Length: 600
Image 1 (cartoon, rainbow, N blue to C red):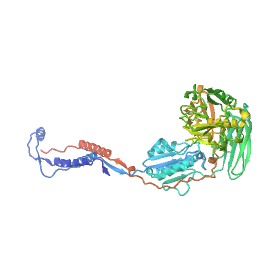
Image 2: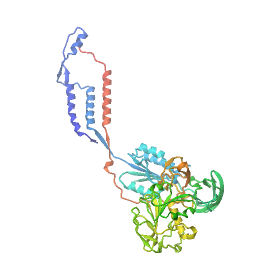
Image 3: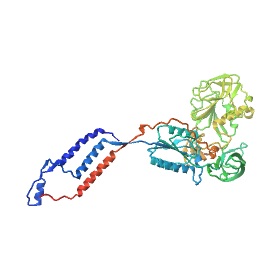
Image 4: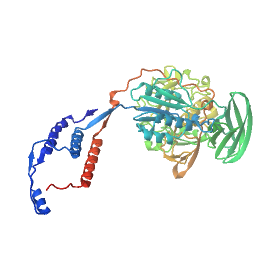
């Protein structure tokens, strides 16, 4: 206990004044009166004297207590309460949607047990964290225990898988820091022993047999054909063989059914060679199990996406041939006519023998850029003959390229770049660079792959297609988007509607992060034009409930709680309330007290 204004205790010196007031006694006198009226008149003119023992009735003690409380209130006393902040990490990832034996979900059970454990603590504040799509603090600030109960009840499970490394890092940081006294972790994933002493783990759910769709992709066998080829990856996560059935519907109309037999813990493929045209395709797996999220997957017919390209070059004719690539539209401009506003409605840009004056706001390819460019800072050297010495065989830019057949007559090599890495090297430096900056992809070539000649120069054409596919973020399939993984907003899109019907504003070239739900997303462009995009769980690691690696938390030195967590609880308000109550009690009793008989 302490006082914020101890100097106010000097006012205790006025307490004796109250005693002096009670020493004033009425001088007794015998008076003969002829009537009560005269008595009362003389009584008003009575005299007082000091001396003798004071008459200390109950009002004295009440007033003395009021005076003492008033002095104490002026001194502003307080109690020191030791703070007990705790943290709760609630796993809301897709795996928590699996059902338990009592037919509730693991997430519902985790919420219930977490709420009960919180009720049994004397927490002063609660920092509540959810794990999916990435670990984040609810409300971004500590909560009062009553608010924490409400937030736990309102929390929802996500369709996105969790990042085990990020969760382990969060738990390690919370358990070793001096910010919280205890961490409650509720999840279906156990902790590897030894767990830090500050962590109280709640583990829910038992291993269950599960059948899952791993991926659902569509492709066109020939460009322009209406029929699509569907390919699904399915898995049997159970200890015994199973017959797996898959039904595919298009726009809610059944299109085909297929079956496959899988052994214990085996993964297989189900294919539909020719599906009829539809906007939205839905695959459903049977038999059903305790984790319905991975029994359904979606795909859209937009497997061959139209990619808009801006070709900036002093030789616009070099853009000829690009429009022969299926799903590509090209606009050519000279460097003098180019402005940054030209990038607003395109998917990617190609700068041939030129470079922009500021970092492009879209993914871009730079072909033999000038070495004096201040934005990218290329250090290049011209060569009359280019000889390829090394390439990365597993890079998306080099996929299926036979470099031994590639003949480059002239070009330039790059020196070491500060943020772009080399994919193909030539004698004296790099021939092909790629990297990311401010959320955008960039490719730089020391040779000129244009004009695009198709089969007439197949190795170079494959490099061109690989580069455009890497920059556009478009593959051959339509099922490459997963819950929890952000993606670039395409050109012209200004809003995105998620499966719940909620609409978010979007800006082309930026990452869209509201991807926690599985289903169909509507990308809204000019004139309310809508492009559909399918987002699926597509994570067989999440679907495996028999093999769940425990979280390993690196041990770290646990810091003690600082004294700054102690809280001062002021008592002034309680003292003032007591004073008011005593004054009211005294006034009420004095009002009701009857006057005694007057002495004659």
